[in-house]
Image (cartoon, rainbow, N blue to C red; front, top):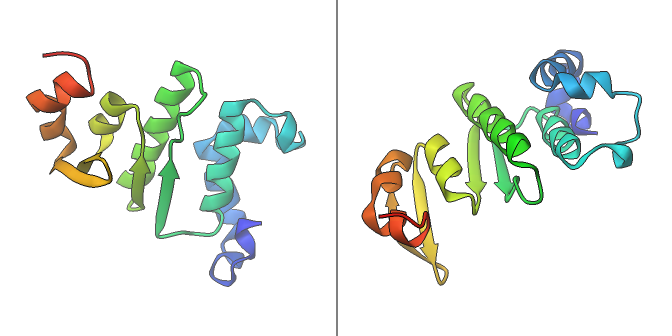
Length: 137
């Protein structure tokens, strides 16, 4: 479906190859109905469909929700790879430690307002963030 956007039609085969390279598990399961995939595989499929449209920006809202820790780690690594390839990523995520590790720029919201901002690494070492969101001093 994502490849039906006019700018993506010409690159649909190339993008399919790239999606399968990024998510080899989807290549193994390409004949399987989407509803029968695991939660992690469905998340991969959603990202793959999005990539088929050749976006300039992808917004992720809690992509790790309900996924096993190993799948979460792999998913966030994939998001980081996409960003390193030049894709702009907006990530909304409650897994503070993992998201700050991969973020170039981060914002901490409290009651709908920006309470803190900085690089992911700076916020990861910020005493307020460490105490309030990471449970450590």
